[in-house]
Every structure is written in C-alpha cells, then in structure tokens.
Image (tube, rainbow, N blue to C red):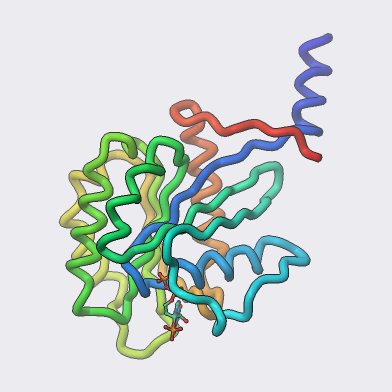
Length: 202
Ligand code: G3D
C-alpha cells in the first residue's frame, strides 16, 4: 500500500529532467533552433525575435516541458576553437542534437568530420542522436538523400544507438515538434542506461 501511494505521489509531484546537447558548426542554426523550440513548447515564453538571435558563442541554456518530462538544453558554440569544449558536457548528456546547415554545401564535409570527432568519444556511447537538416525553407539546399549519403560515412561511429535525421527549418518551425517528440521518446527509452534527474515540481 505504501509503495502504491509513494508511486502515485512521485507520479504527481516529480518530473524527470534530461540534458540535451545542441551541437553543429557555427552558423548551422543552433541558437535559432533553441529559440524556436522554446517558443513552440513553452506557453508564455517570451524570447527574442528570431532576427535578433545571434550565433552561439560559448553556451546558451534553455528548457522545455513536455508532459512530465523536462528537457534542459545546452547549446554550444560551433567555431573550431570552441569545439574543443564540447566533450566537457558529454558525460552528463542524455540526448544529442546535431544541426547541419543544408544550404552550406561547401561545409558539409567539415560538418561531418566534426560529427565524427564528437561520436569518437566513448562518453557518448548509446546516447540517442537527432540530426537536423536545417534551413529546408531555402531554395536549392542539400536534400535529405545528399545529407544522408554524407553522414552514412559515419555509420560505424553512430553504431546501434537511436538515430534519426529530420528535415527542419528553425526559422519557420517546420519539423521542430516532430524532432523533439522523437527525442523525448528515445531519451526515456534509454533511461535504463542514462537515468534522468528526478526533481520535485515546484
Ligand atoms: P548558430 O547558433 O549555429 O551559429 P544561428 O546559428 O542560429 O545564429 O543562425 C545563423 C544564421 O542562419 C542566422 O542568420 C539565422 O537567422 C539563419 N538561420 C538559422 N536557421 C535558419 C533556417 O531554418 N532557415 C533560414 N533561412 N535561415 C536560418 P543571420 O543572417 O542572422 O546570420
């Protein structure tokens, strides 16, 4: 009886928190994606107009609540010199979002190499991975097959973790909800490996 009541109390007053890293090259659209995600998921969120959002330098923090789950985002700068800081956050993360600029054909391979370097860290083993093919609202961008062909070269480092490529536009919001819904399901499914932080709802 006690455990039944305790379970009910936990269900009603506690929430699971998962940490999600947002990575990718500079200019890929990470800050814009974080801002749009918070606007779409948080009622009453008052953020910046998207044309005032500036590139991620250092760290942006954000959060969304969906059902009884809270995702805490760490959006890290993608400039080459800042990529060296990414691995400081790996051990604590429950999910990964990697943002690719679909309009930047010249930097596609550079983006895939940074992605490979990221996945070479054992600290990320088994962590669900959402790849966002961003800026799909623009004309003449790389399509999904072109992006998949490039990132398929990393299939060994992706391994058996949950992985999904989602076409999005961080600017218009297209595809953002679908991507986040997928990730929420995966981090929960992976919680036997990376348990969430459980917090009381205040
Ligand atoms: P970063 O944080 O990864 O460095 P930002 O990238 O979010 O600062 O975005 C870099 C530029 O790309 C910004 O333009 C931003 O408006 C634009 N951008 C981001 N996402 C999209 C998208 O989905 N579609 C389009 N068309 N543009 C996008 P500026 O001009 O401010 O540099």
